[in-house]
Length: 188
Image 1 (cartoon, one colour):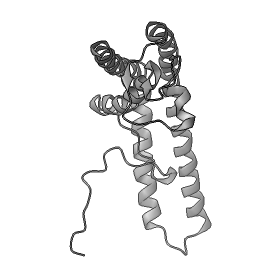
Image 2 (cartoon, rainbow, N blue to C red):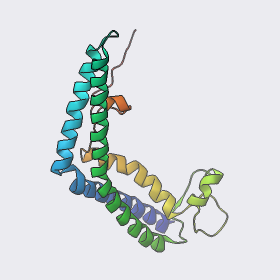
Image 3 (tube, helix red, strand yellow):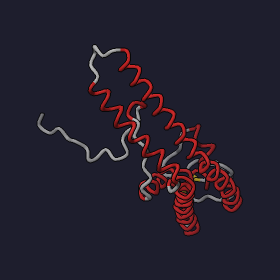
């Protein structure tokens, strides 16, 4: 049982390290570049400008005003697309690193029960949670399942701790980078 606990802690540690590595790669390849900073500033500026125009427009606005807004929206979409392309190179680098690391870790933990689940996973998840394990006990947990769970939860915290915020794009449905504290309507 103590080796299972050590394996679990090791997998959590590996997950933290890989999440920090991924965010570090993203920071080096994307967030610190001048092109990203320029595009991000442009998108934020255009978003604010578009919001102001949409607030001031009336229902009886002319076609020219509506066309100006449409052109601004198109410009904003193009800048958001360019921003996504800047991020793409880090995604490829992270994908390459993670593929190499996963192969190595899979060979290390192959066939080893690394944790005991307190529940029986759903049937379509059991293939992942019981991957490469001997026996029929579906509460046995494989490396890949625990690693994925840890990485999913830790990666978001690593993302926030490195202050990597998404660019606001209100007309596309995304939320602002820092929406502020929630507003509670108590007693209304």
